[in-house]
Length: 240
Image 1 (cartoon, rainbow, N blue to C red):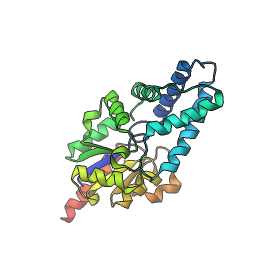
Image 2: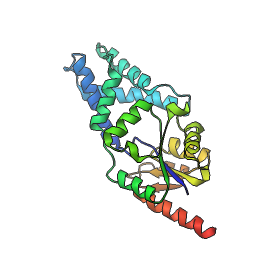
Image 3: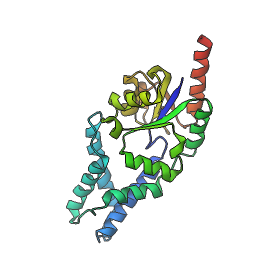
């Protein structure tokens, strides 16, 4: 075992924090559009529905900028309510992510523990480069990772093999020497297994039990990944 890679949203940062971030994006959009009379929570729900549907269609397909997808989703909602999305929508989005995004409480200690084992620790995420860089820097953990591979870099969205293969190439490791941790069985586990990586599903409350079969391991907390990796390293060492 030489490398551990992580997904970002829902794996290193909480989905609850992401929801708060998106709610504040909508609030700021409405403020700039002069439509604070509208219920931002209702519009947030509609924005999430539009954005989720668009990203579901993009799974495994060639990369298009997330900024364009999110902007298109916001514009569809705005058209229903008769206002214009501000030209600086993406800048608003990044600023809100920097301000409101939150890590899982055991994220930093987990990454550091893995690095202490001498492992390459990286990120593989469906993301625009400017978004992930700004977000990691705002969280104070940009320098904690040995590599960051995005769908923008690879030209495809997970579960396409592209992001995983590029990350392995950058780390200089073989697929059988790496493990991937994510919260989406159909994208993270399936994509990792396509290239021969082992997969760990972060399922906080067991809500994804029906898809556990897609993953090699299932954990309810990030720090459990360290024990899995230690066990794999010891097992391989004893066979040599």
